[in-house]
Image (cartoon, rainbow over all chains, first blue to last red; front, top):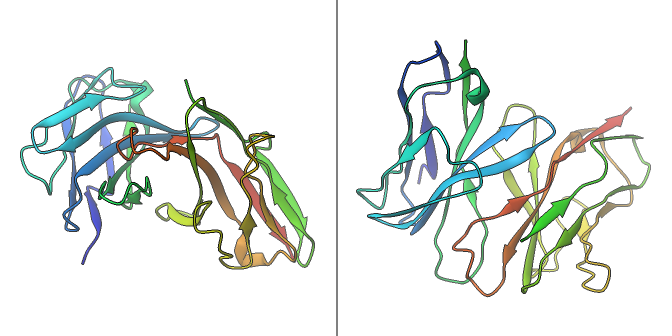
Length: 114
Length: 112
């Protein structure tokens, strides 16, 4: 099992550009989440999904869109990149069946917006 | 609302010294607490969760519901323990759908 994978590892954007951060998991997990990691702020939840076709907002959703057309994939779209979106983005998944909230994380995408 | 507080951004100890990383939480429901560790430029990985009550890499953590704390302890720190540590909170009743609330993180540096 590859676990949770993310692409790209690094990305530099100019203000106003759009892009999609890819996330996939091969563990048949129901729940998937996107977090951003900023110094002194910890990890903050952007969006999450409890299954294919179902998504909801987290703590900091503005400027981001998500969709979940399959169990495996949960892409994060930046509609019009801003310097405030410079961050490290982590995708995570959780099987949701045992009642445990343990999250399995991807390797992260380091995004810089100029 | 749920909140996790890690009061120390930075913690430095010498090899062989005891270390304690503090974590306090605020939650009106039934909490499930975790410690995650992130080594330099790597993904977050689970270190401990309170329901398993196990010791991993010499670390232990006890959930104290009276003090709403989940401090991480190790009696003898090693250089390889240097990393970022996050305390995280979920709902034990399953209503948080796998979402976690994270603290701000503590960077632990163990000096030789």
